[in-house]
Length: 301
Image (cartoon, rainbow, N blue to C red; front, side, top):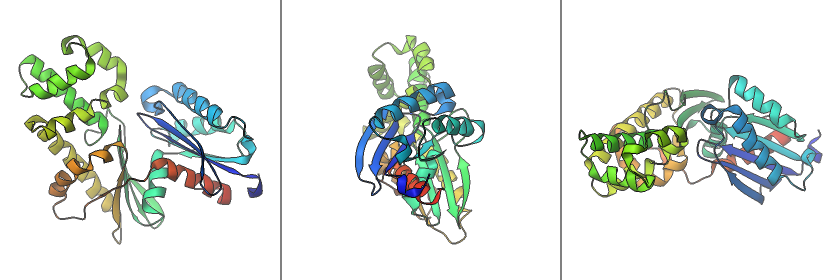
């Protein structure tokens, strides 16, 4: 498909909590934007991921010629191996003029680092970092909620639930977290374990804000949870920075950026004088659109 036939750009940013679709013209001016549920195939299964993509693509592209659209889909959990191939094949069935798929971090690296050397990190339902050095990417963390043990929405939510159940048992200290968890659940914590397990990683991550609210109210258990999780984030940042030959900024994107006023002082303590990360307000979906534009122009990211 020649470049001249591409008239529109479609960016897709999929994570453990939501999936965003943004259709623009070639100057990145928004035409249409929609939000759907999670699309991480590791969490929800590849068939559910395909269902979300099919619904979103069908809805946002209605009335447009697919052959005139260049698309990039950056999905958490869907950027490597067989999952990447299966998603690529699925997207290819729509008849787009140009398309590629990869990781959500591809979008973050694009929008956060602007093709400069540095570290780009996502702190959302999950956590992952990439150092970009002279065109090479080096990954740190990002192995999913069963392996990664600190710094993401799932970890904070899991720690909140643990603290609540420990208080229920009489072996915990935070009545505040217990009460906030029960309030969110809308039922007795004692009978809630089946619903929590059925909800999966996304549901567990939805309890993360409780830690930050409890900390604001002076809760010491919440402080300890923040201390532990930000220590893990600092380790990831330090490791990623080792791959940079000439330094560079560290930019953090994702849902937990809204908690930057609380997180930054903890990270400053753990980074021990190193440059502090930048919490970016730029949207990962905008990086996906930029990659879609690059694909249309160059046939690659």
